[in-house]
Image 1 (cartoon, rainbow, N blue to C red):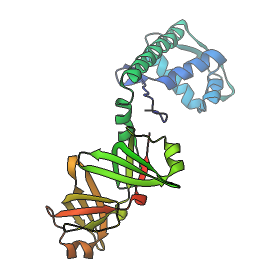
Image 2 (cartoon, rainbow, N blue to C red; image 1 turned 90 degrees about the horizontal axis):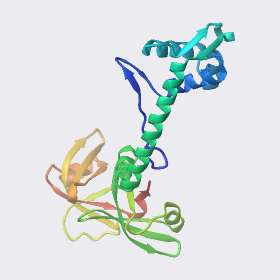
Image 3 (cartoon, one colour; image 1 turned 180 degrees about the horizontal axis):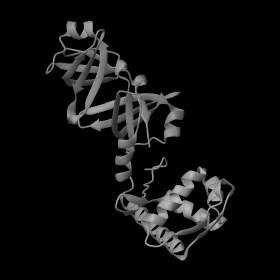
Image 4 (tube, rainbow, N blue to C red; image 1 turned 120 degrees about the horizontal axis):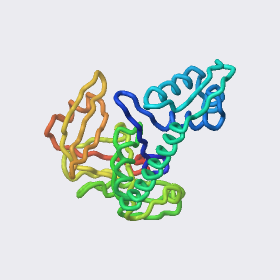
Length: 262
């Protein structure tokens, strides 16, 4: 998937273990245009050897040569793309065009569904917790705005961001977004009837606990199959008795929630 959220695809012509992709076809086109393997190599940013090897691979792959060349070394010799070579270029172009049309139709039919799926899979972040949801409410303030994100039934996360951020991200009710929360920003508590200033209070159950020399990583199971990771001191984990199966509540301040969109 491309950076602008559109589907991309690539294809190869394959015979046995060898295959021809867009890079080899670009080399073939450059040789046809420039009449020289060395000139084609310079245009494409390849070494002369790399370009020569590519030409030889093309000639070996097909039943007739695609390029006829008189080697002239790095200084350049004469090279011509054969009729067979031009046919391969044209065939590749037609398949690319058909593939592009197919992707365009697929994008139009599944836009917002398949695009969101692949974006979620491809997103990289240093935040330990990345929870995808849909904006359920936006409450404007004088400077900041409160944005509520429905992550799952029973799991709602509130973030406080600037009004400018809401505009920049084009946030609106019904639009998808991802809540990013560093594990060190998650505070764990036990017991009922908690009174706290943390806007987010997410009830769950300890799924795993991994102790280090100083810190413990607690994975909390939330409603809807979601999970949240917290990093706390090992001393706190022991004192609170945070064993697998124990109930706990994750507390996260709204300003500590970062929102991301496609």
